[in-house]
Image 1 (spheres, rainbow, N blue to C red):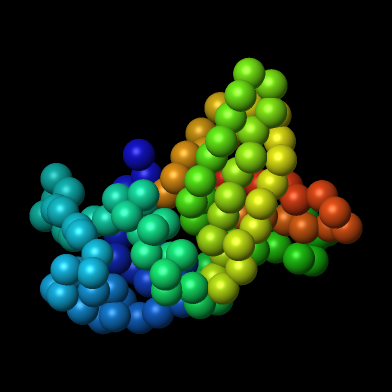
Image 2 (cartoon, rainbow, N blue to C red):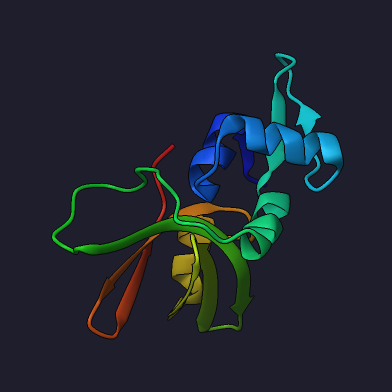
Length: 132
């Protein structure tokens, strides 16, 4: 399960750290403390909120690429069978859907709440995940 710090969550949703803290304080977003006592958010919870609070994220995810249409965001849904998978992402105000092999989903570790980058060229959507 992806665990995100307040700053990461704010960057992905295109809001301030204080806004994320207010959502936590109001109960709109749940958080817990990590082993260092810092507030963290489960990626799954942030993905659900991202669908509701869609704004353009300001983050750099991925690597150098010639693709110009790159959308950082959160995986919100993954549907797999034995061969193929459908991966849905919330990238700011945009929902991006990619069809890929189930093997690729496993290799990238994609699940709801994963931070990823959708690269769009023509009709192909490539989903990347930051190393580490």
